[in-house]
Image (tube, rainbow, N blue to C red; front, top):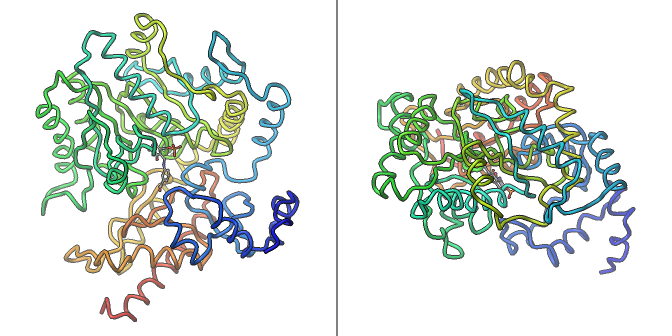
Length: 479
Ligand code: PXG
């Protein structure tokens, strides 16, 4: 195959519709190892080639327009094609494309962004965040959290406090620490994970874990109680921290009952352990707040962020460091032997500043909280009438539903049927990106989405659910 034309930038970058899909797929398969991918399986069908995007839509190399209800991968909060972000990157690259922040140096965008983030992080009961540590991703940020938590307890003369408690089906990244903190059994099975001193309690997933007849409120308190039981089983003097996502994202949009977080707060307070809120998905407007701990009213010590901070236009992550940890690290710690080449990358920070400015100007956070979030909730709840659907619910602009065989008996489909994947296939064919996590279908659309676009998305979702239902009936799986 002659692939030389593929190397010419104009063919690849500018003329999306002119792409030779088969040739790109062949090169993709020959050279590009993708994340979380069965490459032999992919080689058979060829990867979908996404070539351009605008607002809430992406286009593939065959020219199909697709409504991206996953914001890329939970990150393009400001939508695609925002010139302000490209301009900010260009200007910063021409001014100072890179300089490190080791060796007592700093740069202006990093200082400005740290200051801006400190002002955005809401105080809950007088407790705020004045300090930020930057990385380039959520995974790195959670590695930073492990290092910081251990350093904190060492400095306080309690080095035996090593254990970080997390939850089953959590996602905290794919580095050694990130994958260990996460509760994905498939990830633990590869590479001898988790690393020592990380344990997992059960998630607050009502459908799977509630007792028959148990109310959501009672279940929420009982699920939080699993943290206390784990602390007591380990020995409170050995527990360093608890880490959790406000709403579990990759695990399938698991929205905890309202009683869950207040009880978690009571428990971490009682035993004096640090609380890490992993807001890689939930911050920057996703739940209608700049930071999600505000929505649930708890007080984390450390907050992980990434993704939406730059709307995914350029990699950037970090950790908001609360007063109690910052004070010990700064006043007692001397040098903290930890950091990344790209900690405080000037271009990434400049794009983040432009992104936050844009979100403020367009009041995207308020819009999600007061307008599009409630409207999505209303429209999504209608799906509960569909014969296949249970627990269609939302939180800000994330939403999930479960595909079930029998709503009355709560009977699930046989996992081998991969009903979620059948539905996902219909979504692609109908021009909609919706994720399947097992038989949970989930969305996290760009925050710029309008009410009219929510209606357009709901029509597509309904069409895909109907097509899935037709398939299952034709296959004899349903009456
Ligand atoms: N924490 C949370 C809560 C996340 O959602 C990470 C950490 C890791 O971030 P990085 O930037 O290192 O990827 C994430 C990432 C999925 C999916 O399948 C979700 C994520 C990443 C990849 C796939 O939903 N979230």
